[in-house]
Each structure stands twice: as C-alpha cells, then as structure tokens.
Length: 193
Ligand SMILES: [Zn+2]
Image (cartoon, rainbow, N blue to C red; front, side, top):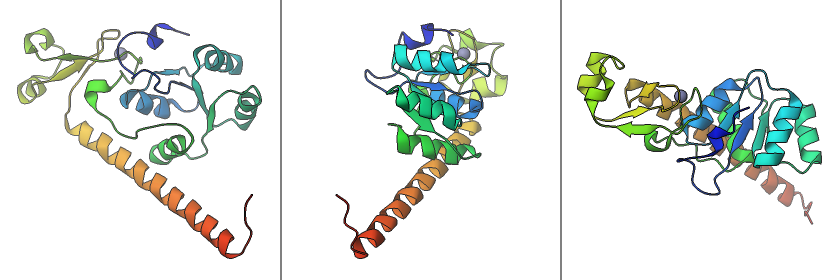
C-alpha cells in the first residue's frame, strides 16, 4: 500500500481522504477525479483497509456489512454502499461523508494512480502523447507525474459532469424522501427526543 499518495499538492487541508474496498473501483476513480486522496486496490485484505483508516484517518468505503461494522466498532469513519450504479453509489457516499460531487480538472487526481495532476500549457511537451486533433483543439492539459497519463477537458468531461449531476439529483431525492418521512412521523405525533 503506497503512502506517497497522501503527500504533496492537491486535497485541501482537512479534506476527507478515503480508502475504498475491492469491489468499488469505479467509486475510487470518481473520488480521485473529484480531487480526493483515495487509496484503492482490487486485492486489499480487510486488515489493510482498517489499518490505513486508523493510521491515516481515511474514511472506508465498502459494500461489506461485516467490514463496515468492524470499522464502526473501532470508532473509524466508514461509508456503506449498497447500489450497483455509479451515480447512486456516489450519492450514497455523499450522504455519509463530506463530498462535493463536483469535478474540476485543476484539482483532480489521476483516476488510475491517485497522484495530483499537473497543469501543462506547453504543447511541445505533449507531442506524441496526445492525439494531434486534441493537441490542436485544447490549450490546457493535465499530466499525471507518476503514471504519465495525459487528460484534457474533451467530450468525456461533459459525460463526467452529467454523471455527477445525476448523482446530485439522486442525493436530493433521497434527502427529500427522508424529509417527507420525518414530517409524516411528526404529524403522527411521535415526537423524537
Ligand atoms: Zn497516474
């Protein structure tokens, strides 16, 4: 498990950091895209996840009820995800942890390796690494200093914004429904302490 990811630029001070369980690779990539320092491996053992959460103050994101309960019993912060679609999963995480549900490439981390991206405007540095049409069409690129991948605000960014919008809608719906349930309970006169 790499600890390099917790250092360096990116991620505002005090911002949530995550460790994501094996079955939620899509959530890990999205958290990184939104700029959150996120550890993920498809081969994590539960003890590794618990240790990283404990030592590095990371929030655990999991679909495993057993791991979730163990984390909570140890006083660790954990998010339990039950959906199978990415937007619904992101909405679930945002209801249980502080999450923006917004993406700005200037603060994104590499979805593949979690390294903060570096803005590059000098296109000569990118020849051969970006399709010529993209190099022609865009002025700003974002390079991962660790794995070398290059990103830019192409058409896929519209897709990214659309999925995050969908996640915000789902979150809003869940909150409205929860509010409606509370109101019904009040009307029934069952006052909560
Ligand atoms: Zn990378």
